[in-house]
Amino acid sequence: MDKGSRLINYFHRIRIPLYIFAGLIFMSVLIIFIVTTTNRNNEENSTRTVEEAETLLNKWLDEKSTESNQVEDIRKIAKEVINEHPYQQASARAYFVLARIERNLGNYATASEYYQKLVRHFPRSYLAAISLYNAATAEEEREKDDNAINLYKKLIQNYTSLEAARAMFSLGRLYEKQKNYQEAAIYYQKLYNDESKISNTTWKNLAKSRLLFLEIHALIDSSVINNAKEETKNKENDSQ
Image 1 (cartoon, rainbow, N blue to C red):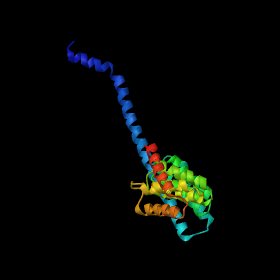
Image 2 (cartoon, rainbow, N blue to C red; image 1 turned 60 degrees about the vertical axis):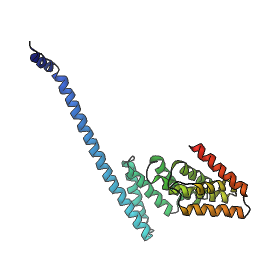
Image 3 (cartoon, one colour; image 1 turned 120 degrees about the horizontal axis):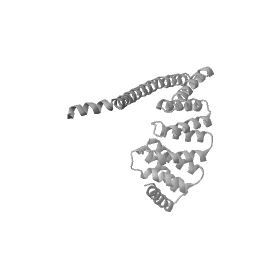
Image 4 (tube, rainbow, N blue to C red; image 1 turned 180 degrees about the vertical axis):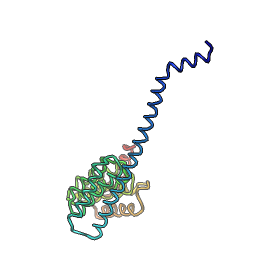
């Protein structure tokens, strides 16, 4: 038997495994195509739905309506997005919608909870930093300053954004309120020394003005400022 005949006989013997292998490849490609198309369609549908909720929310806020049915409709749409598409970015936007509703109704505890859920489920979302900041301010509205402090610290530890600069100033403000001037000076100094893009000139100037206020009114002395600078350096070294 020549070489060509042996090759033909070989492929004839393995034709069934080859058919099976080719069929598996085809089915895999088909499944990937179906899943990808389905996910894309679901993402588009969820995006349209949450955009509807956002539009209704903005209209409700603009009109300052007290119509409870309107609020319930918005809540229902947002919750449907979260329940049906829990891992898609639209759900992050839905949590944000729910938080804004509760905040505007004065339900600060519930608003804070929704903001924090957004951060837990979507820590890399473009809404995460602002949600953490909003959660902290909602806690301040509840006069839960210790909760707010913890949230502001979490923000500056995990995000580099304008909200992080605002959080540093808020920490200084809250520690001032608690008469913990040493700790207040640390965060004001940290903000003033920050050279990253998160701190614009306005926030730096505000921090500097508070440091001067504390020193002029003898709430701290120059040694506290120096200690604050040293503490800031130590914290930065520990975080590296």
